[in-house]
Length: 228
Image (tube, rainbow, N blue to C red; front, side, top):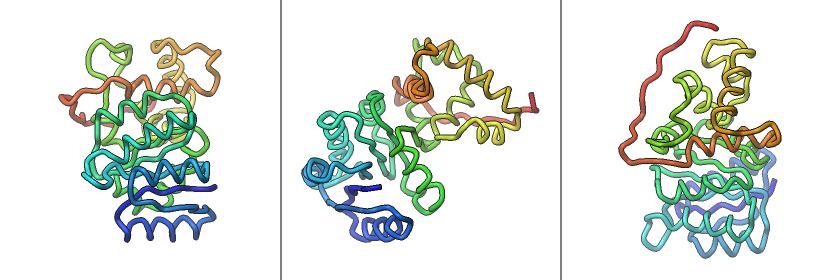
């Protein structure tokens, strides 16, 4: 898997390169700014890009804006965003594009190597990998089909957004695989995702969950449920 990294922190970039190369990935280029990212993507056509939100010169949102542009120039380009915070406006634009895998992780996830490399492979394969805190800040507010979901269906969809498969969701919610399958079916139905969408329904469901976002949204705690 060929990777382009856009990260201005030299120590973090070097650490990522060492980590990824030691696990069978190939880092083809590291760039420290947004123009460099666009040039590297055009040159290497990587399997996935890892992009920091904040890049020179202003260290505000240059990285994620460059990621949006890169996906516009190269439809379907998988992008994994790493950040210390959630940049809502451009995160929403990035997640609204259903073509290709997308991930948005907070940087402390990198320390959990197995989770990080699993997320990287999942995004490169066209899936999603969303940090729970990112999900919490980009939840749909009012007037969205997601509002029709039950609390349990929202929990299932949130875990889908994090990238968990059915078995992983069942384990975390302490329910049966059949219960998860039923909840996901209800999610697809309420979001208007037909069977004709095939495997892309999971991605489209996640994106529907994240598409509408509001700054007044705050994380809500969940409590364990008994097996169903």
